[in-house]
Image (cartoon, rainbow, N blue to C red; front, side, top):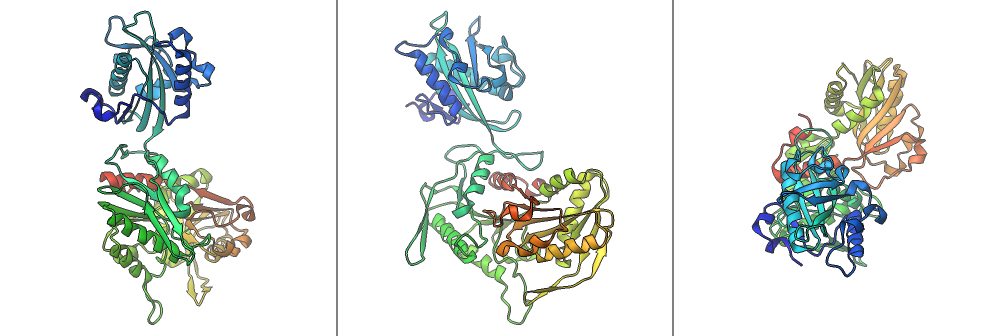
Length: 504
């Protein structure tokens, strides 16, 4: 098999991967290659007249045919403009590659087709395209016998995978595939979210082993080399599904230490929900400040950075850690979701307690900017002691408005249920509950009875979902944070702006 490493310099400059014994990742390209091989039979090359990709079940948007130009030196599109448009821009049958709107991609195809013609064999290539929407491109070029045996026609196939889908428009930081790229691991039941993040970024999840022993101990190790690599580890730290928060935190810490021992140059923990972050100050004599202890653990095992989503207390989070921290919020996701619901109706954003007033105000400003009109505010007093919640002071203008109650998490649901009832009592038309982390402790019994809430919106930062959606009567909506985390990962790796990502 000829690889990129021993290909001519001119090809190495244009492609990230070349394979003269193709094994496409795309199922449609595999079908196309199988069709070419079947029509070839024992001949040197199949003829153009023998090729019919539609007969092989390959959709039109995946294949194309080029003929050699006259005079030589270029290729002219014969069929498949629909397949090529996302890569080359608008094109039609009869157009030459040199005339394509996107010249960089056209130059790559021209050199690839020339190499396939010279080799007399199919070639599979991959590259990252940044013309138009950033994408990973997998392209197959297979020669076809034509009128001039020295100048074959080309049967081609194209598969595009977006490099990144951020939660908003603007600058993107696509990742190049290859040995120098980052590695992404996903521990435990965070694999589903990890696969979604990897798909958005254009990576494959790195393989690892998780093994439990009879006495309750465990071992986690990478199954790929990490020496000299930039490594990201995704882990859900909310207790549940047979593992406590302690179990999950310990597994993550041990794995980070293992990666550093194995030579990783930088390890970043991706913990969308950071356990123990709620205990950020002493409220009683000799209380622990657990978030600080957790920070010291991450630093001790060698974590270079920690990325989390909607920490309970941002100031406490930032002050606790001495390693690099990246704090994200889901405000833009929620703003897009609720803008569609609100339409032209008057709106208000409410905080269920004074401690979350800054969070609610931050979201209110984002929503106001998204709607282009004023959004009212409200808040309620709350005091929690010995597991009991008290406080009845309510302030704000919610009468006749659609109210969005914003908090960082929903655990038992008691706080949110109280606020929904209070908003209704003060004349709100509708009440929607929004929280980044859906913990749903013990099934969140308070939410079952909170019929004042028209909808309950959370993200998939805590997975798997820990409540039966049917019990909420269709009111539950889960938004994906995979695009947000993927964009943040890409920007961390490439040195991009997190503030720009969050719209600041």
